[in-house]
Length: 159
Image (cartoon, rainbow, N blue to C red; front, side, top):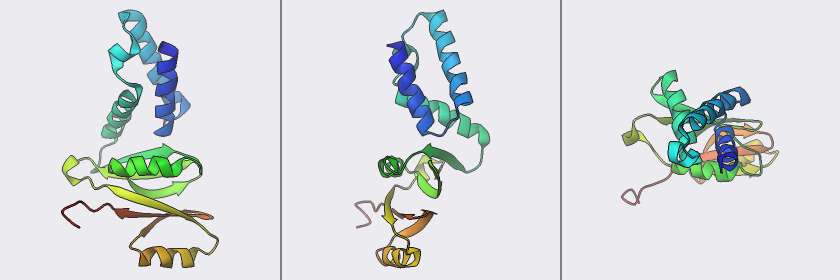
């Protein structure tokens, strides 16, 4: 159970953009605690997804500022799924790079806006941008030939 938990936690932390050194420090803390306490990882830390979110959020709070910033690790194959989940949680895409999605959201939960995302693939950037803007999308990143767009999700009261 411990190995499976640590593997799942590692995958979550990697998805949130932590490097191997940072992940190694967290895993060492967990292994030390488990050896001393005799608890299972689930008893001590809860589900790996939740614990990863708590640890990353704690690191981000130390950085300060009005906006929480996060880098999600992604590939062309899984990035749209990651963005859809991130958008539901209020993460706004601000930039892209190879294997990285740069996002931000306000620390104040009352100011969090949900987002939806689209990706278009084309070498004709201007035509794609004009088409998407006409459909109320805002450009938010470009990694040729991938073009990323965002728009706020409207609440039921806004429709």
